[in-house]
Length: 248
Image (spheres, rainbow, N blue to C red):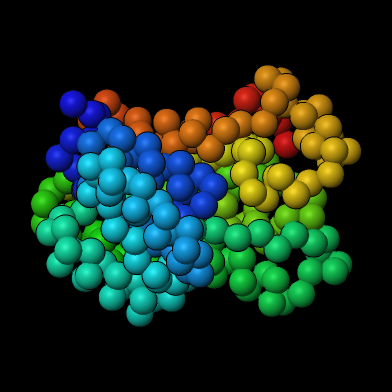
């Protein structure tokens, strides 16, 4: 029996990287899983096919988490298909890095909308359902950059810092209804985005990581497993860093 047997989880941005790792981890631990993707339909189909063949209940939905109306439609559809949502993981996110002198308004707005507004959108739509059930776990994907900042990432840092403040506020608002809200702050994780980095850039990253390696997406998924399971039943309003001791 898995740690999430009998639970239902909705994960945004679940077709690649950290999101995919969470989808696979949650399914392997017994959860019924719904996940969203914005454009990677072929990749989403492969994930669903593989996990369904292995006996797991998984469904993918094309939806833009940054769009309020689409978030509302998504939650209604997921509840119709699965009847409940026990865990919400707000994972959808993008980067559009640039120094502030070169950053365009569009780069700022896009990152804030996708990374931060999406968290509001999905949480807003799911919270009434969780309050009626008097139970739920909301997990928001932040970043160590949201804690310490990083040159060339002021838009990304602002969005991820906003997620931490949002998380703490929601934990206080709905804690009396047995709903927990926590954030996860990954450091440099080996994903499709880091694969494209040159060796010099990777060496610079590694120099600041005491554990001297990039993290794995599954290591972030393991922390999300803890926060979604009953093992963390008295953990709320917290930000857990998964960064190998990185100081940025």
